[in-house]
Length: 335
Ligand code: TRP
Image (cartoon, rainbow, N blue to C red; front, side, top):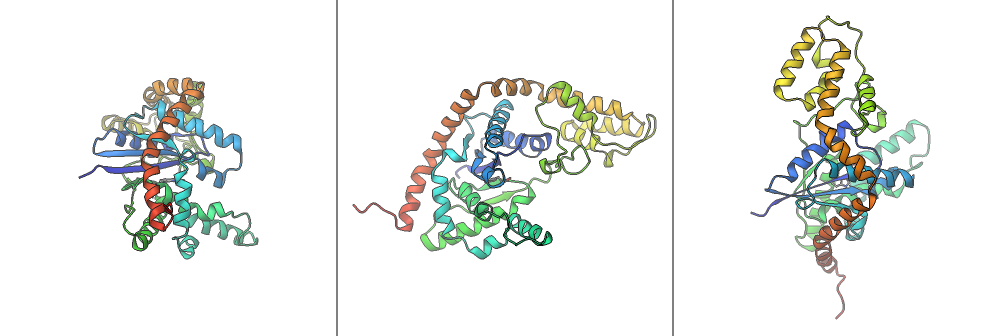
């Protein structure tokens, strides 16, 4: 049997934080080391333009996200690592899929519906501020996935609907033009932790409660010290299961270390001490990568070269495949 293809994209609008690392980057890099998979990981920089109209932010985020994956040891000989915008076959495929995508299906996309609902709530026109980019977002995402015939798409729960839409569009295309696309499946790993942020809610850029992955030691310490706790004094037993400090500990610690920290909570460890230990744990695991990251961030030409090489590999798949798709829809050379 041929290898299972795993593909996922990262929208380049933000700075990677501990939640991204634990929930997506760390498991993806681990999967890319598994020889039973072929991994395709890319910077979804066309998707970035849907929600971010600040060119400098997009540029900075692309650099940060690429440097993050490379610093953490993604092996680009094994995984195909590329930018969406370096693969012109993707927007071209997106058009073919647009012509097969039911408008009614797109009307049901969560991101679009949420934007309409927010407008209605605010008493605005339902379409206020909504671009065709937002509306077509799931079609572009389907093109990302179907372009490489991905079988498995690791994503957060919020993205599952988009994978289902990609399946739908692929099935309709296949039904009409013949079997061209593999039907992708979303992979939502329940074992992978969703981290909470400084205020105890899910760590997310939109809540402004993140701990960026690569900070100086001093800044990392500062952020960890800002994690919200209760007012229990040193010596008073603390509940690990409602504590963000403990929850983040669990995402980095071994089973033994988790058990030990649980005991320390029962014994009334001081919040300051628990935070100091958390800092040591995280710092120990990302210290080396942080140095590589800051080094790479100073060498954008080297990142560019790696991404260009990734685009060449990606296009070895996408160019011949798109040629077949063009022919399938009736766009062949005349002679
Ligand atoms: N929309 C995804 C997100 O915001 C990113 C993404 C774009 C993606 N294209 C993709 C994820 C294709 C998986 C497959 O998280």
